[in-house]
Image 1 (cartoon, helix red, strand yellow):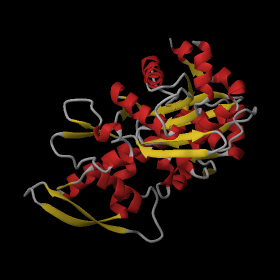
Image 2 (cartoon, rainbow, N blue to C red):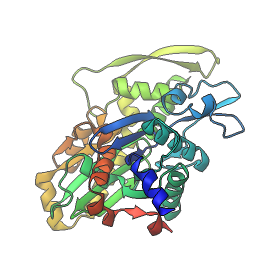
Image 3 (tube, rainbow, N blue to C red):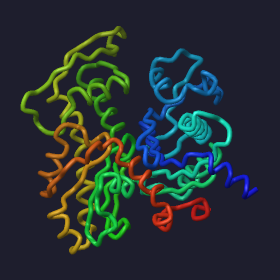
Image 4 (cartoon, helix red, strand yellow):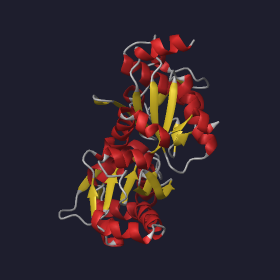
Length: 351
């Protein structure tokens, strides 16, 4: 059996996976990001049968979100960075693993998966089980902030404080790292999804207009901001009028959307403050020079770096290609697995 596992392993491509609430990215050592698709699966309602012969996953499924007829359901199997639907997550992972290999047989890769730092032992076990059932022969888990720090090029192995703020879809991870460990971290379930929800609620409350999450996300990307802009923006938004029940459109400004996003942005600032308050003095002194590095899709919100800089009085920079930091970090773990395996969780640790 071990000989067979070894042989199958030889024909498999080891991969690092950023299993995100909004998007899943796959990184292969020496090749970089080879897959970046939404974490969405389309199934036949009442069953867990994935449509299009198991291929209605990712981009194909996201197009169906909020637009499906009664017999089809588009599901996001991860909620707030953790698995909400075990079986669907397994099918999604199997699809992504198969897609990277471009075949269905002799596929048993080693997999490094980034997970939120605040998840429970049960949630950790669910990630390992899903990956193993999807075809992984060995599963390693790494904390998202550590992977993001490595992907952003921070000196996490040095006796020096590095601070990362990773704003994803379901969670925001804030951590201070040194000597390859998390000195203190805060994981809050307020991130991109909550920003979208805040916009939905604002439109309902102020305009009596019902919009979907995808429309809210488009508004956030097009005109969303955390700090005043040099030239404020406007956008036409269409939805359903709650009073008369008919489609209607209106124009909203970036000033209004900034007001809608104030609460989630200040919650993220609160998590950063809490992390800094728990940082030992010597490492806090390092951060005066090192500053804070931003990663994740939420770091692309206009002016969020300025707001954080103003609130905590530390220099803030955004990582190069912040969307792929975590995935690139998992790929780096695979590159040096013999060194890094000491600090990674495996199935044996989670048992």
